[in-house]
Image (cartoon, rainbow over all chains, first blue to last red; front, side, top):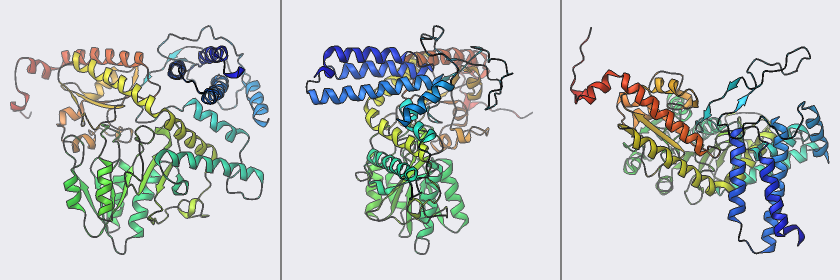
Length: 74
Length: 457
């Protein structure tokens, strides 16, 4: 269960927020930061490991999207 | 594999080094962009480097006209613009198969948003085409026995224009009036249905005043009287929960660029059980079940599908956010300014579309004063003419109030700061324009403007 440990989730959260700051469009940047914060906060108390893993996988995919879109915007 | 090499090529072609942008205005409200000088598609070596940060762009508060592309949607579309470029109707090779698989997946995504079966979704070039197919297609198919259609006075131009062209072909159309709130009277609808009515068309959420029509009740009435029910749901799909079976909808128009998807794509839902027969408008190779021939634009429909999926996941969150911002905007404006009227029913209303009339202020002058904010008075399709919007006229707004209406659009990406800035500027300019207005002076002195007899010169 290393992938879904608390430290890993926090790392993912920080990485997502960091990458979101590189959106050059104001609206995308603010939405990304707000949505990431709210989504992680909302799922704070999820206990089921299968669900946690699914959420973490989705977050990793979204992180990939953010990184690619940052490249695009340049 | 292919995707990664494509990305390397794209990234290599971009001449800017990635990394922290120290000059990115993370706290700035408005985007500083590159100079708007005309640039050719092929960058020439002798052209000078574009000037950085020379022009600011307005805040975008016009989401009813169009919406920005959601980054998740663009991400889904890019592979189909770069590598997977096959024609989905080519049956003989992998390019065609993978394109077709993407198209069918998108169809499934659109269908699940509205509770339909994927076989009931036909991709079109937008809600205008979908509306044309629905209205003209159904009317013409049943023309031998049914010659009557019903619609409302507040519909989108494409619906009204389709009906007008059908009238020229010999059909009869009833344009139902709306109440002052913008909602139709269900008793009038029942009374208007004749034995030879083939179709009733009522839009779900109005694009100018944001009122939500009672779609479930209308669906019930239509299905009990055996009349087909079409709804133009371009502004409603992905924003309010819709189910074509619960609401007994037979045809529905969907627009891509209103739900953070690409422009140039839309869809029409055509019920199969019981089957709604539609005469095709566009002849050709029989694609899309013969109802809309022409190559289906894979990147665009993939974008539409992704937009629908994102909308389904984000519907509740977006609704909460937009409602909060809408409440903030209306409360602040109404509290600081007298004589402001909100057009449309306050209860059956989609919060993201706020149409306010500022008395004693001319709408165009207010729009010009608010040049830092992208706003609109009335819909984009009628903004070229100087006449006040027909929707406002249909809900019985006085001429002078109709001329002073502004539509504020709040969407997924709107921020609190943008709303606060807009409100502040709006209040400031309305006060300034009212100071300059002789009508306002007279009202302040207690004169009733309706009692004045204006003389001719």
